[in-house]
Picture 1 (cartoon, rainbow, N blue to C red):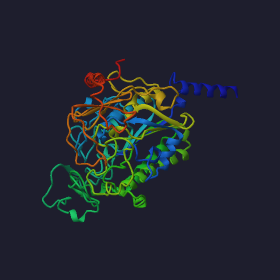
Picture 2: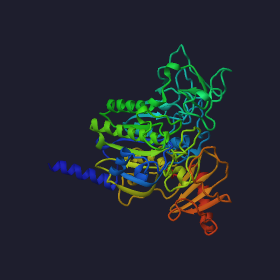
Picture 3: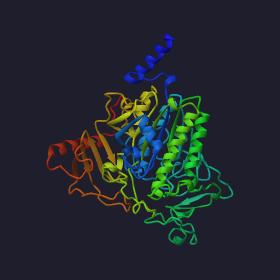
Picture 4: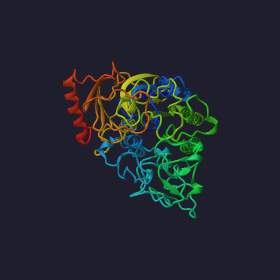
Amino acid sequence: MLMNVLRLVIGLVMVSGWGGVLRAAERPNVIVIMADDLGYGDVSCYGAKTVETPAIDRLAREGVRFTSGYCTASTCTPTRFSLLTGTYAFRQKNTGIAPPNGPAIIRPGTETLPSILKRAGYATAVIGKWHLGLGDRAPDWNGELRPGPLDIGFDHCLLLPTTNDRVPQVFVEDRRVKGLDPADPLWVGSEKPSPDHATGLTHRDGLKMDWSHGHNDTIHNGVSRIGFYTGGKAARFRDEDLADAWVAEAGRWMEMNRERPFFLYYAPQDIHVPRVVHERFQGRTTMGPRGDCIVQLDWSVGELVKTLERLGLREKTLIVFCSDNGPVLDDGYRDGAVEKLGDHRPAGPYRGGKYSVWEGGTRTPFITCWPGRIAPGESGEVVSTVDLAASLAALTGQELAADGCLDSFDLSGALLGKAGAKGRDHLVQQDNGSGNFGFREGDWKLVRLKQRGKTQAKVSREEGVMPGGLHALYRLGEDPGERRDVSGEHPEVVERMVRRLDEVVGSGRSRAKP
């Protein structure tokens, strides 16, 4: 009896004081759920009224709901790069939105979140959207897709190789296209393969979801996409079945690895375009396919939690819920996202969304939940997905490589809701690599706009007034919507923050050298 009490006390001290790492037997399973294009205001625990998200709300109710949780970029590929490498994407070339035939962006030998946890004895898997390139110079769709996730620390993968508005609509399992018939080879290209190849331009009248801009190349499942492909018909999936496929594979893999600690990077397609949900979710909201996708995403989260409970792993598992960037309404398809928005505010009180360096572009839902270890509550500490690498390394007793995870900080105390634990004191926000930056330091937010061209995408209903100069300054506490540029009133703050931003961007790293 005395020994059991002693073990409990020691365990509580280690977690609450965070003076050292947890013992191997106490190290949690880790699931990082990264939603796609989900905005701060898109879930009910962050203020949504038009749509209900009970499974995500449960995570928030049982864990820590961060009100200053960020991804690093306002588009998918750079954020996913930063999540896995612990390094800002602007430090490496070719980290913009990856094309269908893009090569592997994260190269073998790079220190990554999965490689860190694999050193700690974890089984590792990624299930869902990848969008970080495959292959050396280009993917070998009919052979081995190397390098890929298995070369940077993952033991297993079942992937959507790019994103579902880009070809090809096939699964990649480990190193090969799943279910590919060698007699029907898969070809992927950037030019129309033949004059009679059906596209969204030539066969627009037959589409079940019309396009608004771009997205008018190859047609699959009644929806036209970016890029061209032929063949691989046996390997192609139906959009409506994606969520079920991810949930089933995640459940199978977790059950197979239930006896050892595991790390699952779960990256669902939802709520990215084209928004085509399973028939049982269609019409579940008044907001059309975009709202229905939020419901489907929430269902997926609930199914993962149910699997953990069935396997007796719920209290042994740390779940991190986040998004890869802020919201977008019309991102290339006419699916009623703008017309059916109603009173819903996808970015909550924040300005902008996907593609922008305004708060709505990178401040997203961010929740950590570990029953029995994280006390429920709310936190205003600044945390970012780029910090998961260093934080989980600390949690599992791993040292970071000196030349790896260059912008990742150990925020494990804040992520676990420890009283008095601090988050980041500064944060860089980028778009898709245009040279525009946001820089938050405490309550101050500096915006640098080198390029002002607007994407065709409709990211929000209210865009706000664009600042006239290169830099603008906002005080987020009193102006969360970044409506009033106060740079003229505080030139000394602008000068200090410009200098600090230039230092962070130009230094090559923000984590101190060991």
